[in-house]
Figure (cartoon, rainbow over the protein chains, first blue to last red):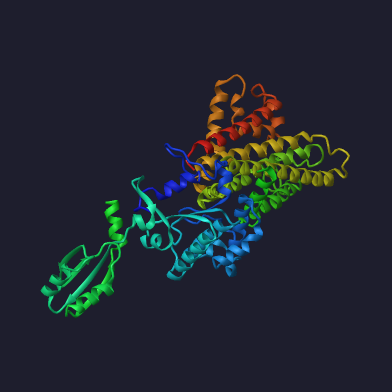
Length: 260
Length: 268
């Protein structure tokens, strides 16, 4: 994960031997020869690259040939990405989303052990995005390692277990997604008598900070905020809350903090 | 990955490519038509349609047919060279050159796929050349008794194919863009090389300029009446045909090595 130009695609390009690194080393699967390793990795890099004059089905025959896997697997992957009905249409007639699906389908050919996906939901409509995310989760539950490069925080949060953040080609931070993108919850409250509410909540255990804004109190509650506890605490002291809202600190804010 | 597997994948890329079939189909149809019209005296050069001296050799019997057909076939190979450029630059246009690597080819395998394609295409063109020559020669000679005389021209034609197509492949790899590559190929073949050749020949004691990349194979399949004309006009001291053949093959090796170095060194 990283902002535009942070080096995500460049890194994947180096790992797939289409770019030469200025320095450093990498190895796949206990030092398998890189081109043999690539046959065991399903990849989607930048844009979907296919022969425009061939159908999706024929294009995948070439992919299967190069990856040295059975081209009979084409039906399974085309069904999986929802292109089976359009398999005989030429690639140049596909919409952007269909091209992206075909690229994902190609990556799935031969059931690779690792998937490298660069912006996998690029160009897809909301339904397509949801499908691909579901597919990614399904594959990961089957034990496939999936590496996704993305600047879509939402995507990372929804599908990833681990995250590494890049900026200007440097690794800023990496670790479990919950640790790196630690959620600090805040709770917004409002009542008729604001001074009394403030006074009361200042005494409530578990609240680490209170900020007053626009007729609201913003409560910082550490890791886990318990809105029910806040509600009953106030009620037991005769305060009726007219507004109670749990706000997760937006990933966006966190991301900006990290990369700026 | 073995040779057959590389070739079978190149074949998958081509077998449904219309441009490939149109250009090879036109080659296959126009070459016999062209030669048939010359043999019949309909297609002429010099003189008008009814009288005057025809500079084209109308002898299509064995063994003369091999050299005669060879000259024209060598000219038609230009269009196949352009086809090689289109097919190769397509990989860059579609960015499939990257995808092939991502899917598990080495850069060398990508290169060898194309180099083998050029080799097989040259063999196929030579086979076609032989069949066409045999049929036409057999027809005009009323028999095949003399078919093998002058058959060395078949070897010269194969070398010409390899020379032109190998050169086209190098240009395509170097330039990567279809239009520019075709433009530079034609510019070089028609103009630049002639300039170079003429300058060298005007300075040297022998026509060493004829050993330039494409010219040396042109010398293998000269204009049918050229040999006669040269002896009549007493032109420059000649270079032997074997020298031309060996030089052309050396150029093919150079194209191979240059393309290989280019592809392995450059960013992909």
